[in-house]
Structures are given as structure tokens and as C-alpha cells.
Length: 475
Image 1 (cartoon, helix red, strand yellow):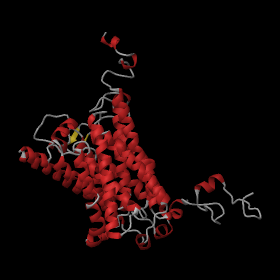
Image 2 (cartoon, rainbow, N blue to C red):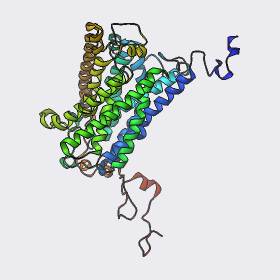
Image 3 (spheres, rainbow, N blue to C red):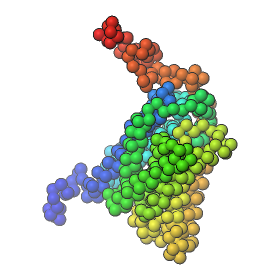
Image 4 (cartoon, rainbow, N blue to C red):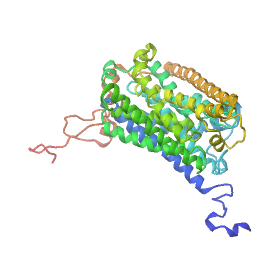
């Protein structure tokens, strides 16, 4: 009878069960969609415009394919492996049907919203991880090999990291590792896996490596802007509630990204005497990546400090160490994913273990377990040295696990695919680009004397050259 005192739109019914919070569910769906937009169209645009013109379509399609393929695999078995009942300490059972109505309409394992929202939310994170890996492989990976790589890597690599670190039954979660929104699971994983896969696939053609002009820098900035603003949902959605912590995480995210961009830009000016647009974009990305594992558990001043470090340490590793270390020079990482995601993600994971505020940590994790979630700096300040050192140690264990697992699993997957199909394109495809691979080109204008000779579009719609008047314009 107490329901009679509630407004009608707040009274429980079949579509609004008593356990569900409409605001939380709305924010979760909104956050998930913002993250999805980071991939499609964000990274599709970014990849398609930052590469040479001849690779624009191939690069964009690698991202678009991954987004679609991950969704099908995720609802088929990926979600259960990453968040199901424990099979082993690092993987779940496939004993639930992620498309079954009763499951989707029941309450998620955390939060006041249904499993349908949780499955969707976790899918967009899995999808963007594969798309980030693609960034290291642009310009030479056989597309059929990529089609095989996506479901295999999702199944045997991503789900292991997600279960271990994010699932309440995971062994690293139980140890108390701090990964607010994917510094380990997404960024460190994609950076290491992308670098490893790039090693097995091999480098681009020498002329593509030596001269690598983007085909449209303004469009690249549009993709980068979608990526930046989409991070509002990336970090703001991970408390699984529209809370104070979500607001804190969103503000810290943008502060760190801005500080990192400015730092990278200043370093480019100091050392190269030119403010690079591409450099500014890289600085933005490293700031967003660095703050991700700590977004809602550090104070505002710490976000500024993390921005300074994420704009300088990955810059140093990319601009100096990459040119000095023999092994780094042997691997052709097209989008420098190792530096922007593995280095920046590792930096953020370590700084989370140093700068995590105990009160913010317990607001996010909703626990009263004082030995956990205490950054080393606060452990020293409060005299809890062992707790602070323990947290930093757990962070380092998590980094080591993710690094080793991704090197091994990615190598095995690449070697298995190589038995079935070549990992690399043919020399003709590498030389010619999109037209040889897809029979289409990104920039084809009427009147340039060329046709889509091999294009499916040409065959289906029977496109003919336009007749021209004496003035040269189409009739």
C-alpha cells in the first residue's frame, strides 16, 4: 500500500521492477552508447583519415568489422566467459544464455539495472579493445586473417583479463587491484597485444613507413573529438550508478586529457619548434588512457599530475626510446598503440597504486576493507605503510599478468591463424592498397578518368561514366 504515496511513474510494475533505478539505467545506457560512438564512428573516422589515402577504406573497415563481430561473439559466449560463474580463477562458465529473456530482464550482478544494460555496456568496452589493436596493424594485415583474429582474441585473451580484474570472483579483483575503467583490461591489453601481433604480421612496405602523410587531418580531429567526448561515458559509467563518484570521474578524465595534450604540445614546440596537430591528438589519447584506471579514485590535483606525466613519459618513449631501442625499431606499430596505450596504461595503473584516495576507493568499491584501495602516498601520510606498499604491489602483479598473458595468447593466436591463411596481404595488395583489397577507394570523383573497375557497387548498380558536354560538365 506504500506504493500509493509514490508518483505513478515511480510505482513498480512489470516494466519497472522494484529493484531497478530508472536514472541509473538511463545513465548506463547513455554511457554505453557514448563508448560505442567512440568506436563507430569515432575510431572509424580517426583510422580512415590518419592513414595514407590508399589505406583509408581498409583501416576504417577493420574497425567497423571488429565492432560488429565482437557484438555477435559477446552475446554468444564472451559475456559469460568474462562475467559468468567461476570456471577457474581467471575465466567464467558459459552456463547462461546472454540472449535469454529471463536473464536479460533480471538484475545485473552489480547496480540497479537489468542484465540487458550490463551486457550492452560491457560489449562496447570489448569492441573498442579490438579496434585499438587494429591500430597497430593498419596497412598490411590480411583482412581475412583479421576476421579470424577478432573472435579468437576476444575469446582467449580479453575474457581472461576482464574476468580476472572486473568480475567479483576474479583473482585480481579479490586481491584488490584498482582498475577503475579499463587501464589494465583495455589499454594495457590492447597496447601489448597490438605490438605483439604487429611483430608476427610484419612491417608495412618501406615507402609506407618512411612517408606516412594522413589523408585528412581535419577529419582526423573530428574522430579524435568524438573519442575525447565519448570518454565521458567510458569512465563515467563504471560506478554503475549516477553518483558523486561518476561526476568525479568525468571531471578528472577531462582535466587529465587537457593537461596531457598541453604537455605534449609544449614538448613538441621545445624540441621540434612546431606545434604538431597529430602530436596534440596523441597527447590527448595518452591523458585519457592514463586516467582511466584511476578516474574516480584520485583527487583533482592528482589528475593534473597524471596529465603532466602522461603527456611527457609516453612522449619520451615514442619520440626518443623508440628510435634508440633495437627491439622497438623492429616492430612496425602503425598507430604507436604500444606507446599511447601500453605505456600510458601502465603509467596510469602504477599511479593509481600511488595516488588512490582511500575514501574515494571505498565509495567506488563499496567496501569497508581498510587494508585495500589505499594508494602508497596516502599509506605513507596515514602511517599505513604496509597497506600502501601492498596496493602498489597488487598493481604491479596485475600489470605483469596482463602483459605476459597478452604476449602469449596473441602469439599463439597469430601462429594458429598463419596455418590457415597468411597474416599479411600479398605484395600487390600492399603496394596498391584499398582498390586491390576491396575493389573500392575512399576518394573517387567523377571526371578523374577512373572507374571502380573491381567494385561490387559498380557491378550491382551498373554505374556508367557520365556523358560530358563540350564545356566539360556532365549533361
